[in-house]
Length: 275
Image (cartoon, rainbow, N blue to C red):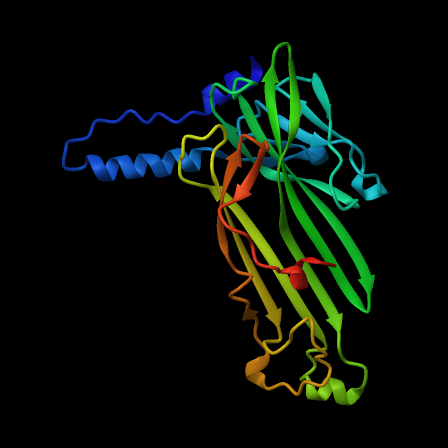
């Protein structure tokens, strides 16, 4: 009953008195507030724990990332010294680092096979590479955490999306290169994403909105091209926004596959997201 009690405590009070003139606006505001309430922020504490502000639920990953060990378990504690350890699934890409996403997404009651109670827990997996520069890439994995009869468990991964990445590629190999590029001797490429609650569509799991932002620096640099020949101007020393890879998609849970799917395909942004 622990997850059920936490969900009940987290529900906002949406019962308000409105007159007929303000009802549509109030309904829209209530819908927006209900969507926002599905995303709960976690506060980082000591020892890598991330907790709800009231401390009723804390999460952490096992292992010591500083020692190079990849965590194998998600550890839960419910306002008590007792801890529950749940095995993590195997994530794609053989990540070198795992860390908790500092949010929870509430899953409310439904008629699903597991009763619909619980949360979506996020784990960010990271890969890193070092060469004539630096590269890292991360993916966000949402895991469904539910209370099943007599136990709490992870029943699977429901989302795996590109989360963020950055590349710094050295392009100056002589004094003349540095002069031509106004000392901007590294091309920088960045991709970042955010996940927000979406409109309530009545699905088994709440809809979500995925938004990405992709940039290159200096402005004329493109990763698939040789940029070492560029002669830059002062106006080039700014970030260029890639409109194609800065996009928004609605994510909806497909009960047939058990996973979230985008409302339309995402563009190929591998120039930003592949180390």
